[in-house]
Length: 116
Length: 113
View 1 (cartoon, chains in turn cyan, brown):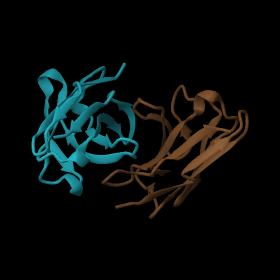
View 2 (view 1 turned 90 degrees about the horizontal axis):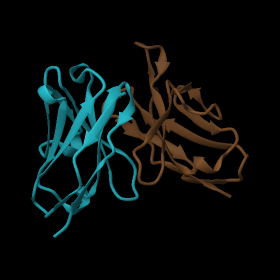
View 3 (view 1 turned 180 degrees about the vertical axis):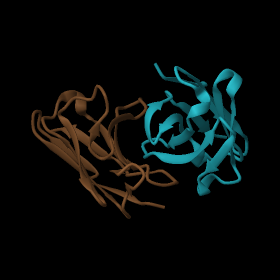
View 4 (view 1 turned 90 degrees about the vertical axis):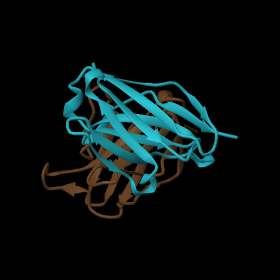
Protein backbone atom coordinates (compact mmCIF):
# COMPACT_ATOMS: atom_id res chain seq x y z
CA UNK A 1 0.00 0.00 0.00
CA UNK A 2 1.04 3.59 -0.58
CA UNK A 3 2.83 5.11 2.40
CA UNK A 4 4.41 8.51 3.01
CA UNK A 5 6.59 8.74 6.11
CA UNK A 6 7.70 12.21 7.19
CA UNK A 7 10.55 13.32 9.40
CA UNK A 8 10.02 14.34 13.00
CA UNK A 9 9.02 17.59 14.64
CA UNK A 10 11.36 20.56 14.49
CA UNK A 11 11.83 23.67 16.62
CA UNK A 12 13.56 26.56 14.89
CA UNK A 13 14.44 30.15 15.69
CA UNK A 14 13.21 33.02 13.52
CA UNK A 15 15.43 33.47 10.49
CA UNK A 16 16.54 29.83 10.44
CA UNK A 17 15.74 27.19 7.81
CA UNK A 18 14.02 23.82 8.07
CA UNK A 19 14.15 20.80 5.79
CA UNK A 20 11.37 18.22 6.01
CA UNK A 21 11.69 14.82 4.39
CA UNK A 22 8.99 12.53 3.01
CA UNK A 23 9.96 8.91 2.37
CA UNK A 24 7.54 7.10 0.09
CA UNK A 25 6.79 3.46 -0.61
CA UNK A 26 4.20 1.31 -2.31
CA UNK A 27 4.27 3.02 -5.70
CA UNK A 28 6.68 4.16 -8.41
CA UNK A 29 8.13 7.35 -6.92
CA UNK A 30 8.94 8.98 -10.24
CA UNK A 31 5.48 8.55 -11.73
CA UNK A 32 3.58 11.02 -9.53
CA UNK A 33 3.82 14.64 -8.49
CA UNK A 34 4.52 15.11 -4.79
CA UNK A 35 2.74 18.13 -3.29
CA UNK A 36 3.33 19.96 -0.02
CA UNK A 37 0.49 21.46 2.03
CA UNK A 38 0.70 23.17 5.38
CA UNK A 39 -1.74 23.85 8.19
CA UNK A 40 -1.17 26.47 10.88
CA UNK A 41 -2.58 25.67 14.34
CA UNK A 42 -6.37 25.79 14.24
CA UNK A 43 -6.33 26.98 10.64
CA UNK A 44 -7.11 25.61 7.20
CA UNK A 45 -5.02 23.95 4.50
CA UNK A 46 -2.55 25.91 2.38
CA UNK A 47 -0.96 24.62 -0.84
CA UNK A 48 2.79 25.23 -1.04
CA UNK A 49 3.83 23.62 -4.32
CA UNK A 50 4.90 20.41 -5.99
CA UNK A 51 7.85 18.49 -7.33
CA UNK A 52 7.82 15.94 -10.14
CA UNK A 53 10.57 13.46 -9.22
CA UNK A 54 10.89 12.11 -12.78
CA UNK A 55 12.50 15.32 -14.02
CA UNK A 56 12.85 17.44 -10.88
CA UNK A 57 10.38 19.99 -12.15
CA UNK A 58 8.80 22.19 -9.51
CA UNK A 59 5.96 24.63 -9.06
CA UNK A 60 5.79 26.88 -6.02
CA UNK A 61 2.85 28.88 -4.75
CA UNK A 62 3.46 32.60 -5.12
CA UNK A 63 3.25 33.07 -1.35
CA UNK A 64 6.37 30.94 -0.88
CA UNK A 65 8.39 31.95 -3.95
CA UNK A 66 12.00 32.67 -3.00
CA UNK A 67 11.76 30.91 0.37
CA UNK A 68 10.88 27.31 -0.52
CA UNK A 69 12.87 24.66 -2.34
CA UNK A 70 11.51 21.21 -3.11
CA UNK A 71 13.89 18.44 -4.09
CA UNK A 72 13.83 14.68 -4.41
CA UNK A 73 16.13 11.66 -4.41
CA UNK A 74 14.71 8.90 -6.57
CA UNK A 75 17.33 6.39 -5.33
CA UNK A 76 15.62 6.40 -1.92
CA UNK A 77 12.10 7.46 -3.02
CA UNK A 78 12.28 10.52 -0.80
CA UNK A 79 11.19 14.10 -1.31
CA UNK A 80 12.30 17.14 0.64
CA UNK A 81 10.85 20.57 1.35
CA UNK A 82 13.14 23.31 2.63
CA UNK A 83 11.75 26.60 3.91
CA UNK A 84 14.13 29.44 4.71
CA UNK A 85 13.92 32.75 6.61
CA UNK A 86 11.44 31.24 9.02
CA UNK A 87 8.96 33.50 10.81
CA UNK A 88 6.60 32.82 13.68
CA UNK A 89 3.70 32.52 11.24
CA UNK A 90 5.46 29.58 9.57
CA UNK A 91 4.59 27.53 12.67
CA UNK A 92 2.46 24.78 11.18
CA UNK A 93 2.09 21.11 10.38
CA UNK A 94 3.63 20.41 6.98
CA UNK A 95 2.21 17.54 4.91
CA UNK A 96 3.53 15.79 1.84
CA UNK A 97 0.85 14.41 -0.45
CA UNK A 98 0.93 12.12 -3.47
CA UNK A 99 -1.12 13.71 -6.21
CA UNK A 100 -3.41 11.72 -8.47
CA UNK A 101 -5.24 14.88 -9.51
CA UNK A 102 -6.77 14.84 -6.01
CA UNK A 103 -5.00 14.04 -2.72
CA UNK A 104 -5.60 10.39 -1.84
CA UNK A 105 -2.38 9.74 0.08
CA UNK A 106 -0.98 11.99 2.82
CA UNK A 107 2.02 11.83 5.07
CA UNK A 108 1.39 11.96 8.80
CA UNK A 109 2.55 15.56 9.00
CA UNK A 110 5.59 17.29 10.50
CA UNK A 111 5.12 20.00 13.10
CA UNK A 112 7.52 22.90 12.63
CA UNK A 113 7.55 25.38 15.49
CA UNK A 114 9.25 28.74 14.99
CA UNK A 115 9.97 30.44 18.28
CA UNK A 116 12.68 32.58 19.80
CA UNK B 1 -6.48 31.78 -8.09
CA UNK B 2 -9.79 29.95 -7.65
CA UNK B 3 -11.38 30.93 -4.34
CA UNK B 4 -13.33 28.21 -2.54
CA UNK B 5 -15.97 29.33 -0.07
CA UNK B 6 -17.69 26.90 2.28
CA UNK B 7 -20.86 27.38 4.28
CA UNK B 8 -21.60 27.18 7.09
CA UNK B 9 -18.38 27.53 9.10
CA UNK B 10 -19.81 25.16 11.70
CA UNK B 11 -22.78 22.85 11.97
CA UNK B 12 -24.35 21.02 14.92
CA UNK B 13 -26.55 18.08 13.95
CA UNK B 14 -28.35 15.42 15.98
CA UNK B 15 -27.17 11.83 15.74
CA UNK B 16 -28.91 10.16 12.81
CA UNK B 17 -29.88 13.44 11.19
CA UNK B 18 -28.72 14.82 7.85
CA UNK B 19 -25.82 17.25 7.55
CA UNK B 20 -25.16 19.26 4.41
CA UNK B 21 -22.10 21.41 3.69
CA UNK B 22 -21.91 23.77 0.74
CA UNK B 23 -18.89 24.80 -1.30
CA UNK B 24 -18.80 27.49 -3.97
CA UNK B 25 -15.91 28.06 -6.36
CA UNK B 26 -15.13 31.46 -7.84
CA UNK B 27 -15.02 29.94 -11.32
CA UNK B 28 -16.01 26.68 -12.96
CA UNK B 29 -13.94 23.64 -11.98
CA UNK B 30 -15.21 21.48 -14.84
CA UNK B 31 -12.22 19.95 -16.59
CA UNK B 32 -12.71 19.08 -20.24
CA UNK B 33 -9.87 16.53 -20.23
CA UNK B 34 -11.73 14.26 -17.81
CA UNK B 35 -15.29 15.55 -18.36
CA UNK B 36 -15.64 15.81 -14.60
CA UNK B 37 -15.68 18.53 -12.03
CA UNK B 38 -12.32 18.67 -10.31
CA UNK B 39 -13.75 19.06 -6.85
CA UNK B 40 -12.82 16.91 -3.85
CA UNK B 41 -14.01 16.66 -0.26
CA UNK B 42 -11.81 15.75 2.70
CA UNK B 43 -12.51 14.86 6.32
CA UNK B 44 -10.01 15.83 8.98
CA UNK B 45 -10.16 14.55 12.53
CA UNK B 46 -8.17 16.18 15.30
CA UNK B 47 -4.47 15.41 15.10
CA UNK B 48 -4.73 13.54 11.80
CA UNK B 49 -4.05 14.40 8.17
CA UNK B 50 -7.08 14.96 5.95
CA UNK B 51 -8.74 11.91 4.46
CA UNK B 52 -10.16 11.88 0.93
CA UNK B 53 -13.92 11.25 0.90
CA UNK B 54 -15.16 12.35 -2.52
CA UNK B 55 -13.51 13.23 -5.83
CA UNK B 56 -14.93 14.27 -9.15
CA UNK B 57 -17.59 16.09 -7.10
CA UNK B 58 -19.58 12.89 -6.55
CA UNK B 59 -17.39 9.77 -6.65
CA UNK B 60 -16.91 8.19 -3.27
CA UNK B 61 -13.37 7.06 -2.48
CA UNK B 62 -13.00 3.33 -1.84
CA UNK B 63 -13.93 2.41 1.74
CA UNK B 64 -15.89 5.58 2.46
CA UNK B 65 -19.32 4.81 3.97
CA UNK B 66 -22.24 5.37 1.62
CA UNK B 67 -23.84 7.85 4.04
CA UNK B 68 -21.37 10.35 2.52
CA UNK B 69 -22.39 11.74 -0.86
CA UNK B 70 -21.29 14.62 -3.03
CA UNK B 71 -23.24 16.56 -5.61
CA UNK B 72 -23.24 19.74 -7.63
CA UNK B 73 -21.94 21.23 -10.85
CA UNK B 74 -20.52 24.40 -12.28
CA UNK B 75 -19.51 26.39 -9.25
CA UNK B 76 -21.86 25.05 -6.56
CA UNK B 77 -21.26 21.81 -4.72
CA UNK B 78 -22.37 20.06 -1.57
CA UNK B 79 -21.37 17.24 0.72
CA UNK B 80 -24.17 15.41 2.52
CA UNK B 81 -23.93 13.03 5.45
CA UNK B 82 -27.28 11.26 5.32
CA UNK B 83 -27.32 9.98 8.91
CA UNK B 84 -24.72 11.54 11.17
CA UNK B 85 -22.70 9.15 13.30
CA UNK B 86 -20.54 10.03 16.30
CA UNK B 87 -17.39 9.19 14.35
CA UNK B 88 -18.27 11.83 11.72
CA UNK B 89 -17.37 14.69 14.09
CA UNK B 90 -14.62 16.36 12.07
CA UNK B 91 -13.70 19.35 9.98
CA UNK B 92 -14.60 18.98 6.31
CA UNK B 93 -12.80 20.74 3.45
CA UNK B 94 -13.59 21.11 -0.22
CA UNK B 95 -10.72 21.51 -2.69
CA UNK B 96 -10.45 22.33 -6.35
CA UNK B 97 -7.85 20.47 -8.38
CA UNK B 98 -8.79 22.15 -11.65
CA UNK B 99 -5.81 24.49 -11.70
CA UNK B 100 -2.78 25.68 -9.79
CA UNK B 101 -2.53 26.75 -7.10
CA UNK B 102 -4.68 24.06 -5.56
CA UNK B 103 -7.07 25.81 -3.18
CA UNK B 104 -9.22 24.68 -0.29
CA UNK B 105 -12.32 25.99 1.37
CA UNK B 106 -11.88 27.36 4.87
CA UNK B 107 -13.38 24.25 6.45
CA UNK B 108 -16.67 23.36 8.12
CA UNK B 109 -16.69 21.96 11.63
CA UNK B 110 -19.37 19.32 12.20
CA UNK B 111 -20.43 18.57 15.76
CA UNK B 112 -23.16 16.60 17.51
CA UNK B 113 -26.13 18.59 18.77
